[in-house]
Image (cartoon, rainbow, N blue to C red):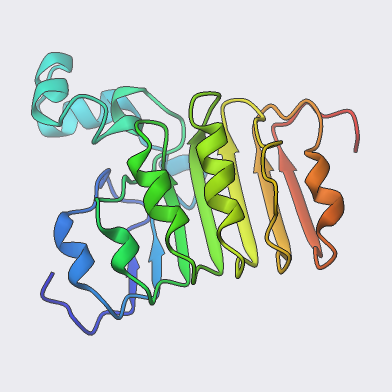
Length: 200
């Protein structure tokens, strides 16, 4: 929290699963990179429990039981971080990558208020948080790059996709492509991973 001049925070490849509240003091922060850059470094529950000497019950009790550490407790293949409340105050943020949103709506609400975002990468989209996430994306009119990892392809509810979107990566069981993709007149890059879509 004392690094008031910090513009880039890169914690990729670490076992950090939740950012501290003090991050909201970094008013000059422009780029936040989290998660794991290579498949070989994915975080798993057993690794974390062994590293920190927790058993499953200890970890659940000590680390706020899933709400704070979803990628640990839910044994996800993709590590990510949870943003603290108040992240919306970081108005200088242009890039946020590797954010986990599967537990609770607070993180999604915070993202939806970062209206200056140009690049966003999230994981943990599911049927429970899909509608709120789609609503948040519709607020990000300046977004140019979007990467979404979902348990199930539930992205049809984006009413107003960011018109400046140039790069889109969708990872998960899509089934069919969202209809709003047709509206992306500036899209130059589309990447689909682990999808079951028959449209491409």
